[in-house]
Amino acid sequence: QVQLVESGGGSVQTGGSLKLSCAASWLTPDTKCLAWFRQAPGKEREGVAGIHRYYPGRTGYDDAVKDRFTISLDNARKTVSLESNSLRPDDSAVYFCAAGPGLRETCASWEQYDSWGQGTQVTVSS
Image 1 (cartoon, rainbow, N blue to C red):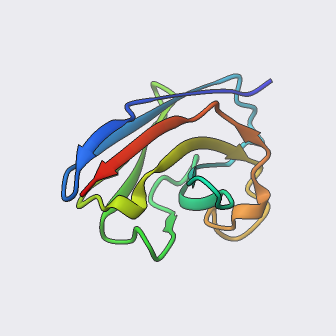
Image 2: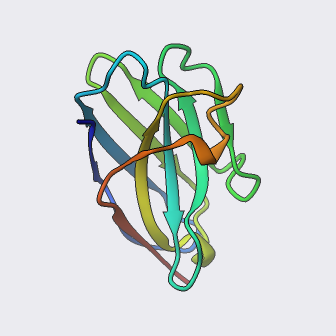
C-alpha cells in the first residue's frame, strides 16, 4: 500500500517561502503521477501541482500558484517537494501529498489521485 508522509509545513509572513517534502514508499510501477493538493477551512480540496514520476519535466500547476510554486521529484530518495514562494494569506491550508495512476495526459488532472498523505499545515499571516 502506498505511503505518503509530508513534512515542512509551518507559519510564515506574506511574501515568505516554504519548502514542503513528501516521502513516498511502496509505490508500484503503475503509480505515474505525484502531486500536491491543499484544503483551506470550509473549502474543497484543490490540486496545486503535479509531476510525472518517469518524466519529471512534465509538470502542471493550478493557475493560482503558477510562477510562485515549483514541484520537483527526487526519484532516488522517492521524495516529491513543493517550493512555495511569494506566499499569500490565501495560500494558507493543509497541504497533502498524493499519488495516482497517471491515466490522463497530464498529472494536473486532479481527479485521478487515489492515495493521500496525512497533510501538513501551512499558515501565511499578513
